[in-house]
Image (cartoon, rainbow, N blue to C red; front, top):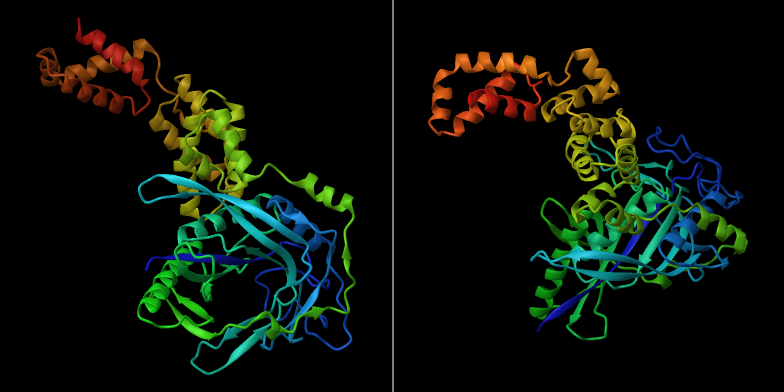
Length: 483
């Protein structure tokens, strides 16, 4: 029997608010354990939650950016479960009345044969909730775990997709696009290593063409988008194999093991009834005004898909260039600022940013925000090349200095005396010396061996220490050889 997969994703995103969701404790990563807490975070009796307005505002932005309908009336609820990092034994979340409903994200998915297809993945809801604390397990082998409540109460949104995803690759593209959107609108840094973005996958299979959903498993412990793709693909194969062997699929939570590339059963999966949801009696119903929604809408920048379309139209760049340049909003802005400074070479500037700039940033573990050269400095490189002031080789040489000092190309060229040699008389003198020192190559060229010309060009460039104007070197060399 042929099966098809049905996949839905639950993505938890920590918002980059200044304070936590329901108290004034700082929302900061990396502080010493239990130093960013208060009686409210620690669930002391009698403490009351106060809704963070910034959390609401950023959630509205996320909802609009993902094509959701913003609900003017929403409500917080209590979700009950017992775990050491949840001191109140319930989580403040939203259940029946979330703030955002019925959105979608459009993705492009590549097939193995190089073709592609477009797909719209529906979003069921985006709702606000508070994060739990963190368990730190003893690393000496003792059966101990320590509770750090610094993260407890931080602002989260949960983005729940409809089960529209069919493969691990579709899940990967959906997550990639969602992350881009959230970073573009500056509601989260989406740093998976710091736990700012976490993803669980609900995976089931059914006979191809069937409308009835199969029993789903929830897959957790995936710390990268690549691992999400691998975990889903493995889980699909596992379930198909189990059904073909006459086994039943259990509704359970499974953990992904990246080392072994498999999933392992952890516990039976709870249903909504097990959490005993009910409206939080300490938080009033959240009622939004139209101007609050419009205020969030006006703050939205150009979103990733619109930016990709515009770069294609304005600069006629290949699709791969556009994908790389729009990966981070700051990188796209950097590119456009460089092209604005020197509009004649949009493709060459793109190549330089994708190769030279990105290589430097990866080597230094930096982002474009940390990059010292200004966009106009990158543009100036190509202006100087086009004017014949420097060669491509010298451009790469001065780029290293630009990265370390932040100085402009012109300043470095003047300081190091790297201007390209374009004086015909000076070049003639150098070339005649090169020909005098290489009589065999001269004879070979005159005998019709064109390869020797390339050798003589190389010797000339060596003699000029790379500062000879390549075009002029070729012209003068051929002129002298024809005498």
